[in-house]
Image (tube, rainbow, N blue to C red; front, top):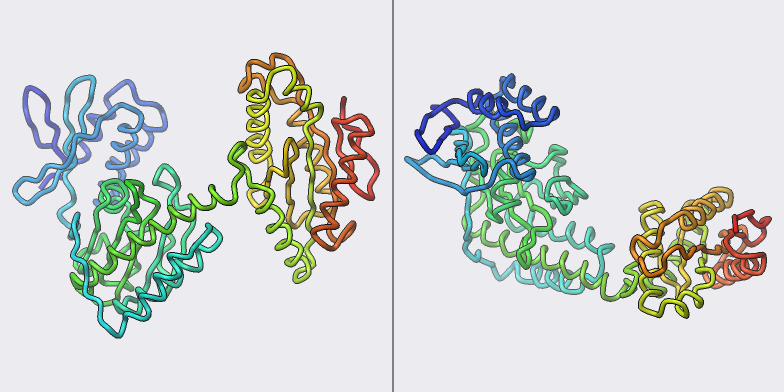
Length: 449
């Protein structure tokens, strides 16, 4: 049976995958990369891989505006994914491979909770309810996976956080026997779980050779759930068993409940981190979070002997900006500067608003020479930045910064002393003419003016 059909306004004609791809390839609006990928899909010998590549191509064309998603149509037991060309009105219907035996479940039962399991569930719910930041998520999710494995007798469980495009894996938290690095059958999960928010249950992987390659033959059944809260999907939950037809309807209901709670926990952690730890104006971390994180880095230094550097930054002549243009424009300058600083440092570095027009930056695992190079690079980036793009009112007004730095353990061994030494270095940079970086205990920089 062919896996694809092409339906025009004038006639309906069944064709195979290769013919469908050749029909798309004949269009002169495709870029070189897409043409190369279509040619690769045409020559693909594995039928399931060819189908997945075709779906990915059509989804990419959908995102670029070349196709529009119409919906799903079922006919004679077959399921078709339908796309329409907005220019010609042609409809492409991609039929799911008959070898994919999976249940797609939009609604699930609640699940049965045994009395002897109540204590474990209550303790888990307490952990979920008290999760306060993204830093705690990994530990709580690992605990949730351990409870899932015990209560549904699963062999492996994994939670995947997805990025905002719902495509790339940002982070994985696993429990049990390690599974393949990639997610299970993206052609199934991306369409039904990630985009539609349904559950996918494959009760017997052993019946389809094509699907076995996703689990290296170790597992026989899998459940894939969306982590969905408030219409947003944060990732997916996968639970595996070495036994076929292992998961019951009670198991599916229980997993659905936990996936909903996990998604709510992720959403709340993100919200609470913004509410509690982020500065409302600049959206970088606030002073309280910075001081707490700096203390943690100093404690880590005591364990690992890896140095930590701290930068204290002040906007030069910022009072004049407020006087000339008003405080709302000054706030826009500070907000733009916060984004610029955060975009210009490593992911492990912590940028915070220390107070007023001052910012603090924690540089973990950074020796004095590297910290100084970072400070000079940031000073130069700010000096060269066109702040008028975000704040047209300031015109050609020049925005520069002065930086004071201190190193643990070279200059100080406590949080309070480190901040104090950086503050003294900052004062020296301002006395020396501003728009420069000076470190406590090091020669002053030659920042431009």
